[in-house]
Amino acid sequence: CKVCHHTSATLKSIQKGSYRRSFCILPGFGYCNKCKSFKSEKDFFIRRDSDKQFRSLCKPCFAESNKPAYKKWVAKDRSSIKGSIRKRMSGAILKALQNGKGGKSIKQFLPYSLDDLILHIQSTFRPGMDWENYINGNIHIDHIIPNTAFEYQSYTDEGFLLAFSLSNLRAEWANQNMKKNDRLPNGNLARNLYNKIKTKEDYNKIFDDINYSYVYDLV
Image 1 (cartoon, helix red, strand yellow):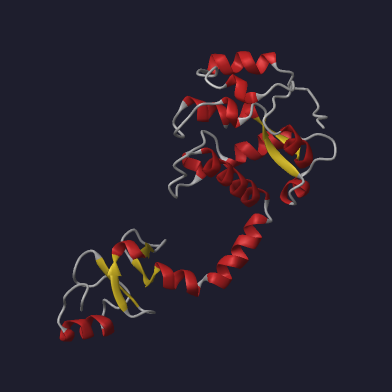
Image 2 (cartoon, helix red, strand yellow):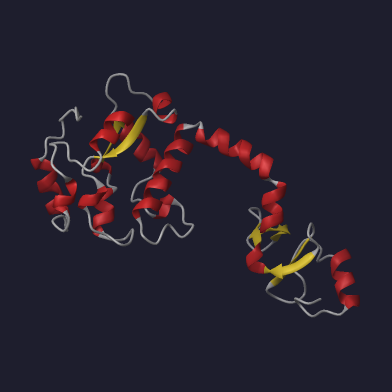
């Protein structure tokens, strides 16, 4: 074997024996039942029902084998409230962070749960708003003070936590949110506040100064 350097006799034993669905004798490598090759342990997923047992297919083969089921799951998940809001928030965080999310779940970035977020956004619904409109894309999650007003590099920075705090998020009609773009509810440009919001106190003062009840009617 070119990967683990086992002899042909040992390799034959591994392919047909008890190691067929797990890692080969050499630590750090595994055997894929589909492409019939030894690969690094990084190329295998860990089974959900075990902390140590790896799947019998490497990641590319596993993805190919489960593509139809995965597409079906994605469609079902995104048609649900929690799945839809998780997907959009994940995209917003990915766009906001220069170095991306690093494959981490949004649960590791936000100081509140998805259930808390759902309840909060629902509390900001105005007449005509509902979750069906949200899932269909007619409603966005609006940053009341836009992201361009905050300075941050990492999800641990105060600016990020303030930008994505529940108090700074609300439901807004998609067309109104796109018209708003980089503006505060009072019509001023959010980018003019950059470097001025460094603490929770700064955020609260600016938030109190803007007219939160302002209804967007931008041209």
